[in-house]
Image (cartoon, rainbow over all chains, first blue to last red; front, side):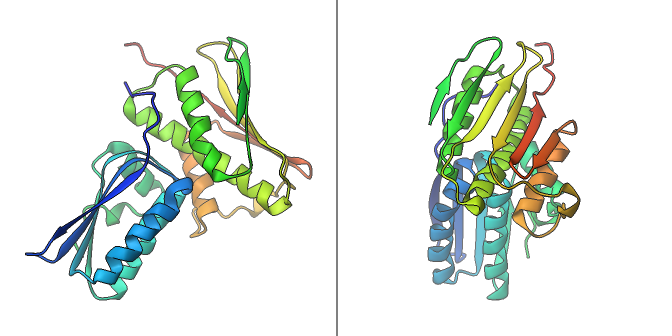
Amino acid sequence: MTRRSSQQFGVTTETSSASSTVTLVLRGEFDSSVVPTFDAAALNVAALRPERVTVDLGTVTIMDSAAIGAVMRLRKAVLSADNKFSLLAPHPFQQRLFAITGLGHVIEATE
Amino acid sequence: MNSSGPNTSGFRIRIPPEVEGIPYARLVLRWALPELDETSSALFYGAVTEVATNAVTAHMHASTTRPVEIRVQGELGAQAIEVRDYGTGFDQNEIKEGSSDESGFGLTIARSVCPDLSITSAATGTTVRLPFPELTAP
C-alpha cells in the first residue's frame, strides 16, 4: 500500500565526469505544479552539454501529462544538440503512462 | 484551500485556480479515501490531477478567481470524485485526444485509467466524474 503523506518533488543532479553523463534524479510527485522546478534543472544540465543526459524516475510516485511533456522537451533539446538521452522509468504506472501517450519507446532507450 | 468533511456521504474541497493547489487536494483525497496499491494509486490520482489541471486551466482562460471544486460522493466503497469548474465549457467532439497538446494527452490518460469517466459540459462550466477504483481484497 502507498504512503498517504505528501511526497514533495525534488531534483538531484549527479555528474559522472568520466563518462560525461549527467543524471537528473527526480523524486516525489511530478506534476504541472513543479514542472518549472524541473525545467530550471533541465536548463542547467543542457548548458553543460554533456554527452549523455539521463532522467531517473525511480523515486517518482505520481506523474501527469505536464511532467511527461517536460521530460520530452528535455529529450528533444538533448537530441537536437547531437547528444544522447536515457529515461529510467521502472514503475509499472510510469510505463503505462508513457505507453498511453505513445511514448513507451522512449523508456530506457539509449539514443 | 478549504475542505469540509470527510464523512461517509461525501465532502468537498475547494482549491484556488492555480496548479499549486492540486497537490494539497491530492493529499486530502489520499488521506480520506480507501488506500490503493501503489500502481492503482499513482494512476488514479494521476488521472484526478489531469482533470483538476484542466479545470484550473479553464478558470484561467475564463479569467475567474472562483475556486475549482473537487467533490467526493457516495458511500464508502462506491465513491466517485467529481471535479467541477466554472469555465466556459467545451465541445467534447473538438477534443483531439492523444494530440501533442498536453491537455489532449491529459484527457487521454484520464480516460484510459478511468474508462467509466464521464464529462458534463455547458457554457457555465464542466464536471468530470471519476469512479473510484474497485478495491481488491487484501
